[in-house]
Length: 253
Image 1 (cartoon, rainbow, N blue to C red):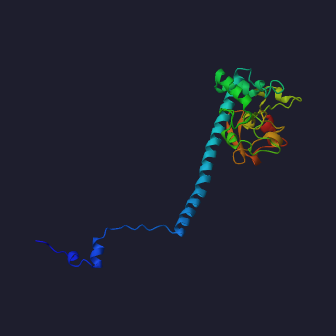
Image 2: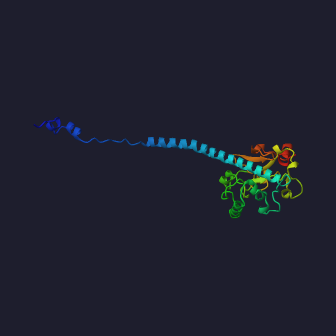
């Protein structure tokens, strides 16, 4: 026996047609205002996050630079222990890179002769810090900034194949950079700069504040001292040799 449902009895009924029709889900689209609001929120979050990430990365690079200088100061002191308590000259001759303190110090920094040969061949064909192979002689911030490293006066960033300059300390004669430094001549090792961030292999009083001093770490630079510790100094706190503090800082007296 056929059973009659309301829809069969009233086929023309709009209610029945509505009940019989398939359900259609309607999706509400975003309005232009809503989209603009989302974009604005993303922009605000990016403006907050990107600088924070940048600061974190720079902090890590500055820490690596500090580690580099600590290793270099250790290597210099190790060299001195085997060379009558003398650290090497900035240049043993007048300008030959292979007679520089960096080249002399390379094996004392823990690198093999093979690694040294490979690195120096790359240095000769890639004269800027942005492409040099990474090692303790190169600050990662200087590599990142490439040709726009903040510094003093008429400094030309990255003329140096490395990121650091050795303080020759000596004030004798016109070729002081060719003279070795005796550790015994440093009266105040904890207050005298040994190695600093520089666009030249030399990092002494004569040109640092006017020619080749670098300030890559948000207006500051790292310095390794003769007692082995490393300190970051803002530009305003780097002593001028014309002062008593400056003579101690640069000349060890």
